[in-house]
Length: 241
Image (cartoon, rainbow, N blue to C red):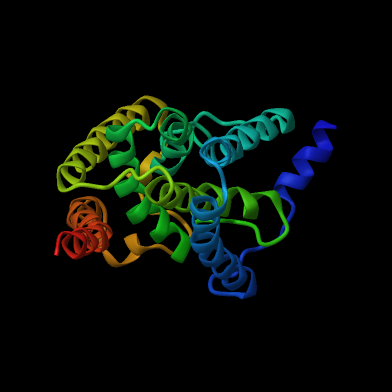
């Protein structure tokens, strides 16, 4: 079984940026982002809304855990590659806490992480395999599924991003950056792409050479955060008026 899993996890099935797999994954995600929260809000009881929200949270979290298990079964688990010290992985593990306990501060942090990093990842995916490989589903559930869960928390649970939450999330981002840097120093890894850019195309390609792209990335992150907050801000103003 180990050899079969190893061969499957490593078999060639390249993902093509902006290809048909990418296009349909994006279209389906956009549909789900709209329909699932609206259906739950308008058609489900409070109890079933909570059940669906928790299920979404655990779907996103389990996606990362299943990957680690498969790498372990295949004998290819590597502490330099598979620990949860990329932002998206850590967020995937934390999102069930929001969906179960409605923790507002954690929601604020994950919202701005998700609506900046996750959407950016959905546009320029760091994924090695195309449909229908596990790695394809792993990436899009971990990123697009995370966005769906956050939108669900806003529409159904009525958790609202705030300007204070924006700055708390930015502080959390930098604390995570420091943590990932410490891990990288100890393991010789490249979590959070601190030591070098990913091999696949990404926004980092346009932010200059190392280490300047890290500093420029701070400003880009703030711009993304304010872009993620803008719709909420205008909706709040509309409600007040």
